[in-house]
Length: 221
Image (cartoon, rainbow, N blue to C red):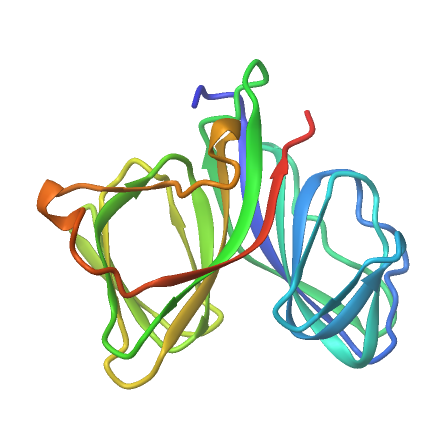
């Protein structure tokens, strides 16, 4: 990906029961993942817990009767400020942001949201991905080994993977582990896996992780 000044950001929006945004979120390529509760967008889409919505235009969100905790990923110009939701019963915090090398305006890219679940003690063998992304832990605990460092994450914590760096992931030995991620990938990977194993001997080994897909949509320039 060529450096064109993009930023991938993850926000956490909390809406009390029935709360509505006072102003629409501005036009950006974004994913709204319902971490808790439910919400509805002004285009008529409804998302219950563990579902996601994608759009590139302005959007207004209203929480369901149990409220909503929304994990929001946005692709924006590198110099832009975080977009914080506004309204009665609405709060917003920035979880993580990371500059990207791309997407190149001359190429076609997709924005993918999926989740990765590990059984107790599961792991992801050393691998890379064909594009960058931000992960956020939803359940359990996980250790990420990359660039000679090991980092331990708990639910709600996020981390960035540029894609090309080899990563080994070790999930909790005490409970199932699951994270949600949004990645920026070449358009030819739509509907296809982006993972590439570093060690040839790992290609045929059984893999413990399981995937759930939510969004796999072309990015609007």
